[in-house]
Length: 618
Image (cartoon, rainbow, N blue to C red; front, side, top):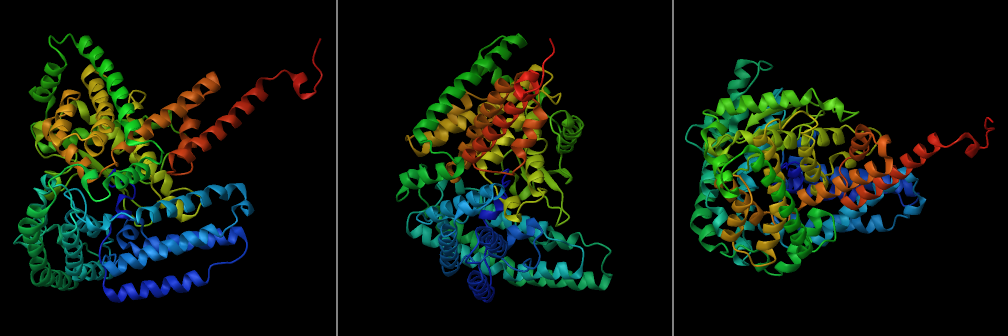
């Protein structure tokens, strides 16, 4: 996401002090009253400025990742009053955007308006569904994102640490508001499936071990630099420990008890999202929102079945190439269990990931004319999250915040981390996948900041999956097992189309989905189980990967056919990424216009001289 990969954290922030909430409302009202009433360009800029400011100040966790100043001492107000207020503000922004006469905008700003309006409209349409009543799952919410936000904060000066302390002091309110939303959801039968919550109490308790220095919440105070005197460091750390013992430990342990004794026993046992109140319409909305298409769940299911069949055929060819004496199931069991495919230590696994990343970086100029300035690193997923975490994810960096991007790899259960998947995974999460695309979007010049922070899962994850196919051009996949691994990852995303829609629309059980996944993939059962549980708590999100990839591949195929020998892969990629993340319908329009221009230019350059009115030789 890339979890969070979409500026995935932009949608999942946390609680604030009520005083800050009142200030936020007053500031919004004042800024809204000052919006220009005439001139399309001025109106658009005013709306963009307010929308960007609103996002950053309403969701301070996202602002921290972006490097937006002034809000690092607070969380999002997730009280029912705060949620209601933000929804009303969003409706007012949508109404104002409808009053803008887009025909008065120059061509270069048409896209800005289209994206602003489409984003606001989609958000308002989502208000009919109570997503806010499921603020925590085993994949998102308090246990992972609070420490991640704290870790992303600047830690250079005493003032930076005062901001961290301010957030720690407000953390009990976060816990209280989160618990209240969960309790309300419990009353209405709106919870994640019970089976997916099994690790959540342990995740919460892992935030508050007996030793404060071992807590992910206080990590910043074990990394203090020489920019502060020893006495200042000691004073700040002492305050952090006091807040931890007197406020955080009690609040989070009560939260863990609530989850264990009330929330899990009372959670819904049905796994289909469509079993929730108004679930069919709710799931359909999530499908449209995540895929940015009008495809129905049934249509997506059929696309998935076709892709599974195609990829399975290519996998069978590789099995034959290896000379393996056995069928598909036996070959995948061989890949899951043979010791040659696994590391014997976490450090060895991480060394290999870093080596792969370094090899990729040197080959990128073959495929891209423009590369990002922002660097990235490769780190382990924190131990308190690793058991329930996916195989890997990417966390965006920020030039403004002075923070590199990070490719996080899971080192839990080494016997479920095969070597043959590592190249495809690195290409997807780091370069030329998420880091390249997201960093380039952040570095766009001449566009409004609102465009640089936007994220559309179908584009972002579609690009990540498409990038896996570029591994061949980058010198990856040199042996049949790595090539099979790349196909396994492509199959993984094709299977998602089948099992996500199968479970949520067509009545499949969790066990049926696991067995279908196992029958068509070499991924270990632990990974498969984690994946299926992810689809249960993030319905529709996993559909975006394959649908985005298929759209990008179709656009590339059309360009290759139209331009022939004049097709330039670097120009194609630069154009595809040149506007940042956009919905798939917008991407198709942009790339078709680019292709038409390139075709016209190519035709003009190869036309005989008389076509332009010039004399021709005899």
